[in-house]
Structure formats: structure tokens, C-alpha cells
Image 1: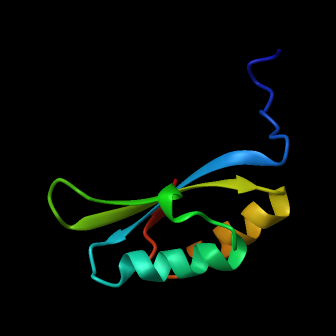
Image 2 (image 1 turned 90 degrees about the vertical axis):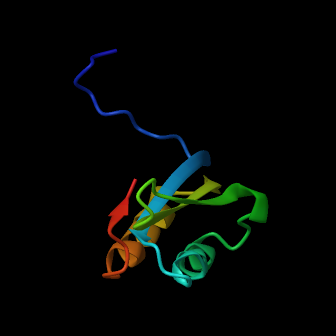
Length: 89
């Protein structure tokens, strides 16, 4: 395999997602609501939240089965349209 060739995902695939924003009390529910619109079968045990070491930021991590590239693209598009979402990894 050529190291310069992009890796193409084969769907469905386990997909990790990490959404980072300021640590506000309603940030996790806000992000979870968006993700559930695109991943309705998201399991509660596949959602974790963590505060940054300085206490300023919060990350909400998800693991789900992505069904298609279009599904993932739509999710990223909606998340990135909100000013509260500072980073998506």
C-alpha cells in the first residue's frame, strides 16, 4: 500500500467522535442532542464526558456505528455550524 494514499473507510464502521467546547453545564446535553439526530440508536454507554485539566473545556466522546459517509458528513456539518463547538476530533 502506498503511504500517500488516503485510507478509505468501509461502512458500516465503528466511529469515534470527540466534541470539545467550553465547560458549561448544558454543553454535554446540547452535543448529545445533535449527535442523536444523526445517530438515533446511539447507546448511553458509548457516551463519555471529561473536563480538561485546567477546568475550562469539556470533551464529549462518542463511539457509534457509522452507516455511511453521508451520515458522518451531515453530523460534522451540523456540529461545526455551532459556535459552542470549538473542535471536533
